[in-house]
Image (cartoon, rainbow, N blue to C red; front, side, top):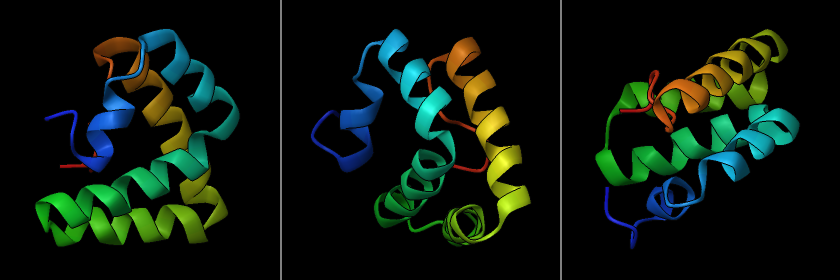
Length: 82
């Protein structure tokens, strides 16, 4: 992903900064990231998951954990954000 895209700016952050952001704002970042990713890729599943993450509490918690793990292991949000 190019750094001139909306999500590219987040992906260009250092790994430690992204992990700290995920720890404190993970649920919010996960939902907003997926909605912005939809604007770039036009994948409707990404939009639906982004909206559900922002609206539901349980979905928010699950995605927060998954995104934190994927940030640590692969340095990017990659589950249902394609």
